[in-house]
Length: 101
Image (cartoon, rainbow, N blue to C red):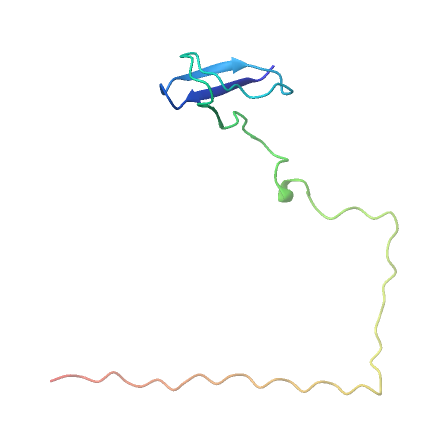
């Protein structure tokens, strides 16, 4: 059964209550104020440690295949022209540093 934490806005009392998930939240404080109690959201006390919790941990390498793929060789087509090589960029000329008197 979950334990919920409540806080009263009237007396600033913080208390816990064991309730079923199906139960309605409390609305009455231990001091007697009605309608001033609010459920406080608590951080979850869980930590995922170890391997297997990340996308890159689940894969150790390429999946083994059952059949070997046949090697495919491409033959150049006579109809398609060969792309021209791209000229390399030329670096900017260096300027010598100037000396100040």
